[in-house]
Length: 267
Image (cartoon, rainbow, N blue to C red; front, side, top):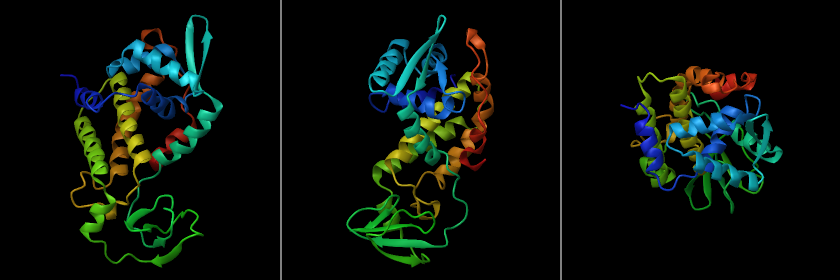
């Protein structure tokens, strides 16, 4: 049985696959810290492993090129892709959020903010009212704020901040992580699993608020989603890095990872 079948099936059963988005995931997770460019052949091998045909990949790369996201160059008979300068800046900013350190322990100080516009990272608990952790706050100069301890947060409020679509996304993430537990993967399979894990996590981080574990609803499939992703990612790093730095099938090894890579998820 294919160890990646549950993840690959889930990927293709979620509607039309945006291959260009999957390519962006690869760049942000595996290319930028290894010299910033990837051979077309290596990218093709990786995407084919999860059921993306070469022609579909080329169409996605063409779209990204037209949109100014990627640039193509050649060395002899080999072609390579890299992010444009503007795309590099945008992805770098988002990447810091994707790989932030998981929350450990309870948050001691909270801020309740009331105003006309939602603050960045705020959890909506009532009309024009948001709750957020008291550290690293956004600009709240246009809000009325109260700071202090959170003494109670009933299940009704927990369900309010965890929407149905957010719950479904976390359930799918949990299914992927559970499917990888105890499975021995080849370097290519580990890289494919890492790509699918981060692709799903990236969409969750971009679409939904980062709910502190202590505020998650009782029926949440993961008690600490970021920690669960970090643990799964750590298990995949070794063999997946071997594939990126390997020369199988005549592929040129990618440069070694930079120092920032070792700090992902607070490692």
